[in-house]
Length: 232
Image (cartoon, rainbow, N blue to C red; front, side, top):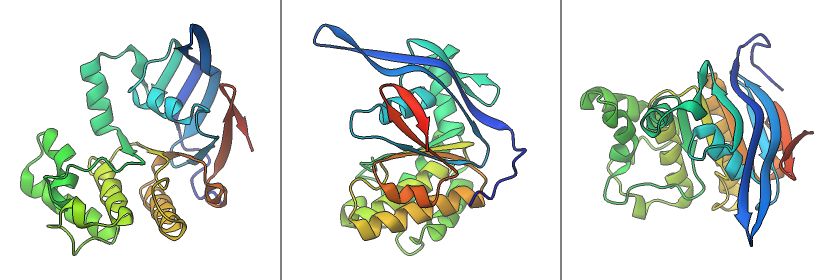
């Protein structure tokens, strides 16, 4: 099932990772002394019921949340030692994020939504637009460049979000319940598309989902329970 080179380097390393939240005056452990490594080109599924810590773990990897203790490495970079400004640049350049709720900007059309992260990096608008057109063609929306999000279906909006996540050619794609707002048929299409684009471009992808369909596609499947990752 796995198509990547088994000698590919480690892209993400989590060491003794801990994250707690205060709930009703007591400390609740969401991530508890967690260790894991994910290699370049691996598709990793995180399965767990709502509240199990899937989103928290993705937020720790992307630097949206900071751990209470432990380390998060992306390549050679220890990201939890970075400033907020440096973390913003890491997310913009090295991590593509696909959310459950799409998070498109309603006042921008499809191609503007996709090019925005590239333009924020100072890229030439023509270059950014050319890259975005190619990605939108790849996700099946080559004819919808000038449409606005409110007239797109949920599946189409998620396709735009996938193109946006890829525009800066990140090392890592994090997908947080990317099919959670979609009907089953559309969800499967989006899942297959995500897997295909990650495979084609040799990205490390971590998908947090409650969908058991992902088991058919992933190289590694983990359940998250009581703050720990269990394989299988």
